[in-house]
Length: 165
Image (cartoon, rainbow, N blue to C red):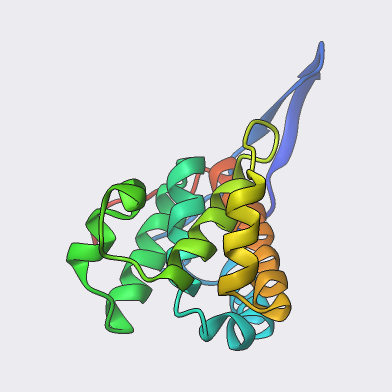
């Protein structure tokens, strides 16, 4: 299991970190991966009805620029039967007819939570989400989006190498 980063110098509001050594075998295992797995079952069963768990994770990871999470969740989505064609257009989902109303509601929430400091969720979109998803599903998608945003930050800050396998 990779060791935690350690501060090697600090000054004027900035820290330099010594990046832990991560081997290819460790890159998808250990604390990060097991924590991710342990969180998913809590949100996924309620969100699974929306058939959008991986789409929520992928969209947030696209916005955050997290290559590690994009690779992991795209692979997971394909293994679960998701179409590579649909995955190719997730970043432009509004411009397509690939996604159901439930999936679009989940994608709206994912984008809003991910870009919360700059994003707005107009009342018309909120109303559409409320008509499409139950209160429990909305809460589950919010929780899932919050969790993947946290994991994106961990993966990005950890500088986990992402290379072809």
